Image (cartoon, rainbow, N blue to C red; front, side, top):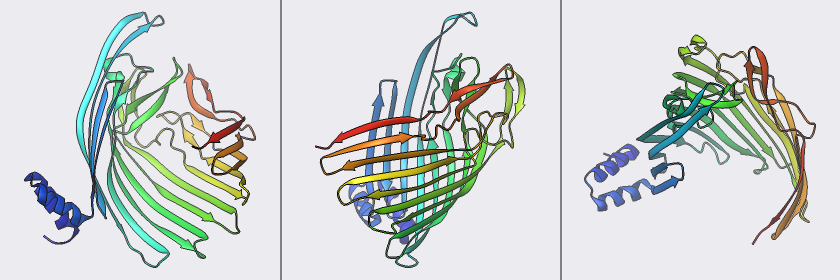
Length: 341
């Protein structure tokens, strides 16, 4: 077989035959990089990732093994030393194919198709059984087309991307009113689609202007069942904690002497805190700023986050119909000293 597809097939046929020479020759022909990751932590989670990265794509194999034990005590519900455990293991093949073309020296359209995987895990904050202790992996099929461009002798860049994501077993975060915590569960199917735009400009020496905008439309395709409140059907609703839009606008100036300043506005559109789409958070803007001095050895930065002390919620829920939740971080000032050696 000839071409990129034939190279890939020859690579995996050689691997299946355990022929090292053919394996290495196919890798060189693909211009590929073979990478292995191993990971382990104190929470009984062990994993391995193997990736083959080529000129036009990527094949990645993830393996993860997890186990958790927990004891549940509740004076409110009269439960004492209820013990339960959960675990999972498995391997996932995650292919990624990307095609790009240099239309001109400054314009590069591209298209990408990939399979995504978000490992399952354990919810230690609010489970009451082995079933609620563990949540399942999330799978996605991602499509993206876009273009990366530069203009005016590379002093202006403009990038745009359109995307569509199909999700299976979508991991959804919801608030637990009794504890004020957030737990994660799996919705059946969902999708999202949208557009992202990014602009950067250097109009004069030392100045950089930047901005980005993203619009996302999300929808639950099918998610129904029965909970403590009775049967539910969230099909057609928006996903939780998925803002309708986000944007950034800002400017930075860096002087030849090392002094610098930066200001940015971070905008977040409306979103829902619950799967039923009854608790809606309005859009809001945060203003951040920093000034300082930096050289090759050290950096001093005076910074401010949420300069206008904008009020917003990071979590919202209702107890007996009464809204409650957690406020986002208020205005913060700080001084950061960095020494490089």
